[in-house]
Length: 632
Image 1 (cartoon, one colour):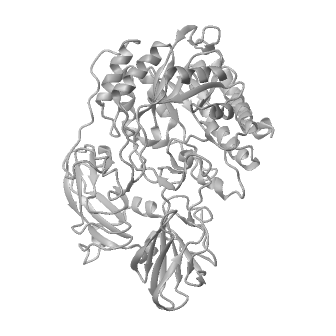
Image 2 (image 1 turned 180 degrees about the horizontal axis):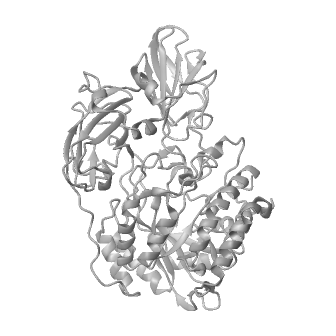
Image 3 (image 1 turned 135 degrees about the vertical axis):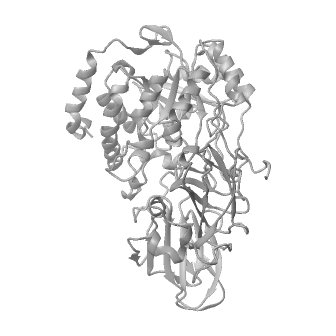
């Protein structure tokens, strides 16, 4: 594919940017291969950096987090750009509000932090589909992260939008971006397609110019370095505290004989899946290894420095032997907590940095204030089957066979599939997903009465009884698309036929549920809850309540003790998923600025299985991210 033909429409803009910045020319950032170092404005330079994801932190806290990183002694940050966060719908771009990348870059610049940019197009990051937009899966037979024509065209269109925004922020153009990663840990992907990497290299050079450092990052194995590196892209490596530093950098040297040593992801913690123990990495090991690497002259980025939160539906998933969804908190046991609080790990890291770099004078900015607002009792609104006129204002789509989320262009959240029992079932009759086609959890009701669930990889059959013509509702939850490995082509919904006894179920009404849109517009109100609303129910049901204003809007943590699994919204904002019975995460982070100091704060809960008998939720002043934590 000729990249110049694809991007002809933006040539004039790119030339304008080049000409605009040519006069600045006073800043430079390059690699001194002879002396194995970076050069910044002609002087030797070593960076100590930390990863932070603007997509996981509310905009109103960006400055706070960046200042804390700067006061730790970091001279750079590393950030991903999630494609699907900015182009959720094909051809519709959003760079406003919490998606205002240039504002984030500007804040970092004002704070005194350089930027290592990782624009993908794939980012992994335990983020939904590794940052790739789900609409790519509508393209038949597409091979993601390869030179497949339709994939390359989509990538080219996205980069033609993103990279011109980035170019003015390059350090060589007067900005603060010192280097740009091409793809991400590509060596861990099965395709090993060098034509794809060459296309990306040409694409990035076309839009960003010849002066910026382009680099790759790969894991500490020969296979990953072989498939993830390419001539013209500086090869770096990543590893954690379980690795021998000398052996890892020797591997980098085999693929990049000259130039600076770089650990692009030095792991300060790790991710959690539902059902795991909360991951922890020993702070003393981190401090010791960081000191050793800096003493070698290596540049180091700590992944993560602050993790943040998978708000809404943005969590990713892994699939090795089975599907495992990532939890809502991306705390990562990082030096800054999910809520941006400095930890002992951070203070220890600052002391290590102080041995090698000047650390800014003055105290570390304090933790944001927290408040325990106490218990709130919710009221039942109704089960999901009775609310379809509200939740699906466009009405259902009729189909002989089930359609996927991607077929329906309902990329995230929930869809409801409705049909009728084809015959009377006086005895328990198996409902089967024969090809493991439930992606990811299906909540089954007959005539509005909850009967149980089917679940990807683990629960593929359940029994039903009923009368011919009874209404069968199947609510399917997308638990987040796989973000790593060969199974990222992760379609959602009912991917194949369901069989009830000896009948293949057909004649479906499929409801794409606009739950987030309806809640953002003010539904439900307290008065819309039913007269018997203080009774707990089984199955997918909405509950609502209000947290009365207290005159303050401080961070808090929502605990749903006794509830099973579901989703929570505060004042129309989707906080993410809860699943305390599975754990380890027990609380959801509620940023204080989401709350009103003068008006009642609306709480909406979609409980998918079984609500707490007392319908109470608790706002606490501390996080509980491990199921073995205190059960208060």
